[in-house]
Image 1: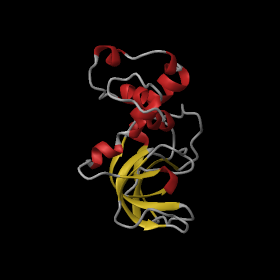
Image 2 (image 1 turned 90 degrees about the vertical axis):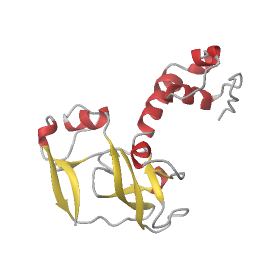
Image 3 (image 1 turned 30 degrees about the horizontal axis):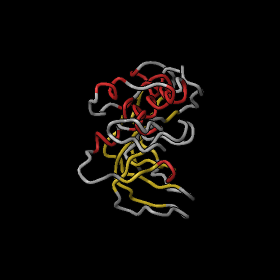
Image 4 (image 1 turned 120 degrees about the horizontal axis):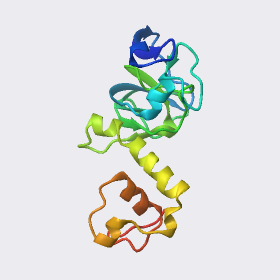
Length: 180
């Protein structure tokens, strides 16, 4: 058995419960992660409140962001093994996978290995800010047509928005953007 944060009705944080559930086993293309840290973001809160792009099916599980250690690997998973330190990229919907548990199943396509020295907390909370910045700046605003102020000021790119811009296609970036 493992513990999972679930809710059985929509509402505020008071609807959350810690439930004992059977330990999930990874299927083809999946890994099981012993979760060490989780990120909480706006999408999680909206889903719990019943205001997300999909409706929760009760009891509902959720959570896009997590980091931990792989403890089981499903068939046809390549490049991962038990003991690997990983974080999860948001590449699924809440009704497919949920990270708010002691042990969570994730699709291997949404898992990346962690470099040494990256804390569990940083790893669990990195991806959502970057995907949010990418969506807003690149997909919606088509930033390929404009320059960011950090480039004009020649300051280091440390924020998610600057990194997303740098990663996109700007070859004029003073820190050497390589394009994608």
